[in-house]
Length: 126
Image 1 (cartoon, rainbow, N blue to C red):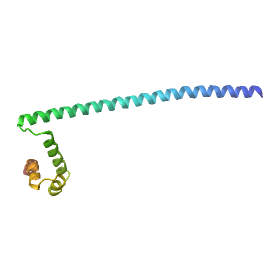
Image 2 (image 1 turned 90 degrees about the vertical axis):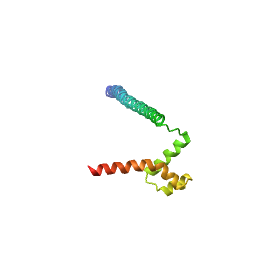
Image 3 (image 1 turned 45 degrees about the horizontal axis):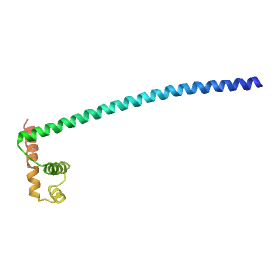
Image 4 (image 1 turned 180 degrees about the horizontal axis):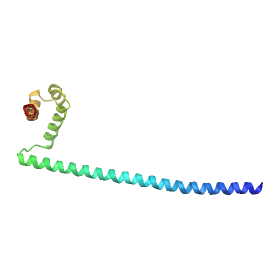
């Protein structure tokens, strides 16, 4: 009886050790997977930041080449107006939201509307 109890105790201790070793291996593998995901995510973030920086530089070049000198407030205002227009807000709603006249909104979005209409005409002519 004592030998059986001692054998069972030894077997349980052995199984506990084996379980601990396997658990460590599994946690190391999981940690490696997490590290790989983290590295790939950081690389993607780095690439996105680089793309944003390049777009900002391209935008600065285009602005300087075109001769337009807009303040950052004017640029932000135009960006917000164009964003609202692209999200299908009406000109009246944009004017009310930005506290300017509808004519000013039309002047801001006019170059972008003309460009879209011209592209549509060319696409239909082909």
